[in-house]
Image (tube, rainbow, N blue to C red):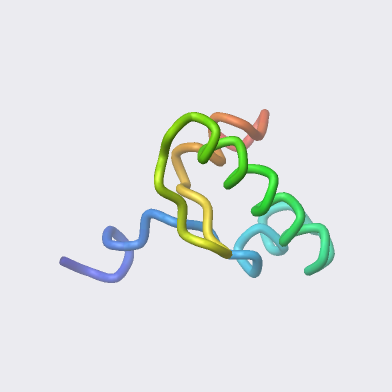
Length: 62
């Protein structure tokens, strides 16, 4: 499996680049989305958010 297809998560650095936001704002977004996923019963990885979920929540990126 190549590197491009194996990564299904965005990190804070990815969000900073995609959205043009600060590191602290990126971590706040990650925390918020992970809390939403936990409330829905999903297992989350701290400091990362699934790309699919992120694209559903952020208008204009899909």
